[in-house]
Length: 268
Image 1 (cartoon, rainbow, N blue to C red):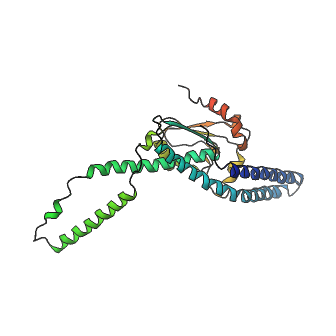
Image 2 (image 1 turned 30 degrees about the vertical axis):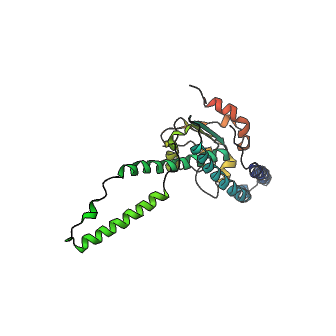
Image 3 (image 1 turned 180 degrees about the vertical axis):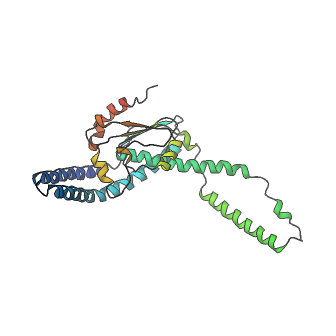
């Protein structure tokens, strides 16, 4: 299935990005024309200035799309948890679609933690009546300790109520293969490890080393986006450099068939 979401917002961001690309290329041309004795200074100042201006133009719509993508990912996770489908699904997304998949895996990992907590708590049902037969000679300190433990137990029960697992299926059983293509998310090894934990098959990160647009989005935010570098030191993650298959970030959609063939998707 192909999931379409926030088409108008994504289209708006795409148009802004195209204008940004034109602005940056215009600034670069001006720098080239002005290259003289002070060329080195102009080059050092003008290009970063153009990039900063460009990143500000992208910032607002980018933040909105990020919020929508993260929320869409949580809803996708809920749909999978409530689904009657018994076979693991394959999740593949490019650009902000990859962010939706990323958010979905984060939510599934969170639900998996709750599922495991409930499994452990389910084994603690018996043997809680010893405190009711305390002797009359118990000291005040013992009574105080008993009261403290009782309150702690009540708080734990309240927390358990808040984190009760609401679904019938184990989250880690829902997803087979996952493919990130040009993922606009900073590399976070801890989160990616949790994503790997709820992925039953392959977890593939496809990136391009010359994706200046994705890098531009992270100029003011810091961090390295997954779509521009390999994800290292996370066991079970496969990295594929698809620079030779993609002209730019906005061309990922056209390159999907070639990328899937390149990573040997669905091959035994």
